[in-house]
Amino acid sequence: MFYGEYQHSIDRKGRLILPSKFRESAKTNFIEKFFVTRGLDKCLFMFSEEEWRVQENKLKTLSFTKPQARAFNRLYFSGAGEVIPDRQGRVIIPQYLKDFADIKKDVVVIGVSNRIEIWSKLVWQEFYAHSSSTFEEIAQNLLEE
Image 1 (cartoon, rainbow, N blue to C red):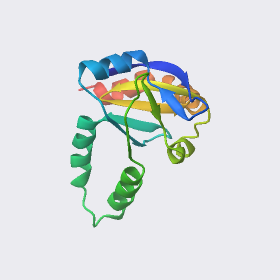
Image 2 (image 1 turned 90 degrees about the vertical axis):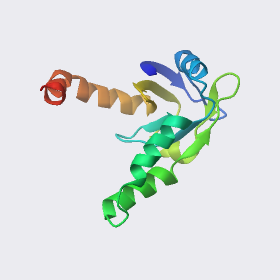
Image 3 (image 1 turned 45 degrees about the horizontal axis):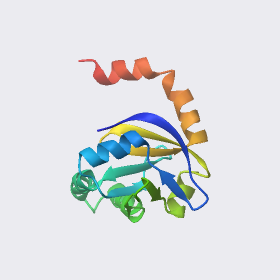
Image 4 (image 1 turned 180 degrees about the horizontal axis):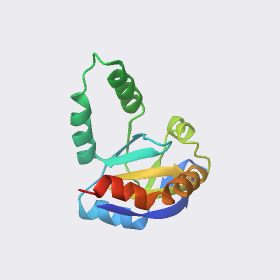
C-alpha cells in the first residue's frame, strides 16, 4: 500500500506533509486517520487505523509477566498518537516523537508496505549506508529456502 522514499521537511509549525503517493493511497483505501509511534532503528512508525488495530491485537498477546514485553508495550503504546491529515496532507508530529527520532527539520519518509516510516534525514543516511552494503546477504539469509 505504501512504497517509495521521499525527502521532506518539517515546517515551522511542526507539520509534515505526507508524500502525494501516500495521500493517494490513503484516499483509495479510505484511510482518514493514522497512528504514529516510536519505531525501531530510531525512526517513527505510522500506521493506518486499521493496520494499527492489527498490530495492537498482536502486541496485546504478549505476556505482561515478561519484563521485556512490558517494557516494549509501555514504550510503544505510550508514544502513540492519532494524527489526521489536513486538506493539504499535513500532519503534526508530537515533539516527544521528533525528539525520539532526532528529527529536526529534514526527514525521509519511506513506505514499507503496511506502514510509513519517518526518519531524520541524517539517521536514514547512516542506516542506508550501513544496510545497503549487506542487502544481498540479508536477502539470502531471509529468503533462502
